[in-house]
Image: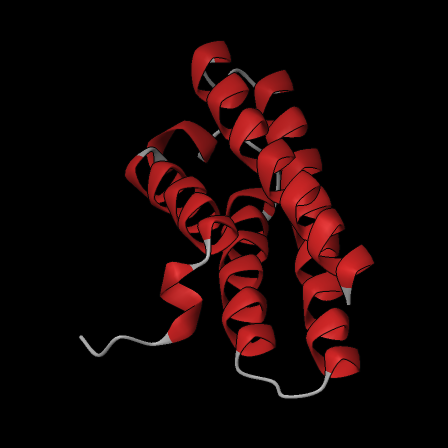
Length: 115
């Protein structure tokens, strides 16, 4: 893979870690209603893609906009994690995902304020 700047961002690495963890544990979302599992996965993908796209933007305003979208997707994913926990997903797994997403929100908040 080429060395593209977004891969160096710690926030991207943590977001990708959360996505990988969720994908590796898909079976735990099966008891959730409707499209909750796929919705959570879409939100996790959105986080990583918007961080990458923001890193590739030249203007601070464009970067901030994509980081804000990623932050919104992170809070959406965290809400999904809370709901799948109510439907019986393992507590330790949900806590790990919630911790990763909390770190993502915190780092994105700092990045947004700097722009």
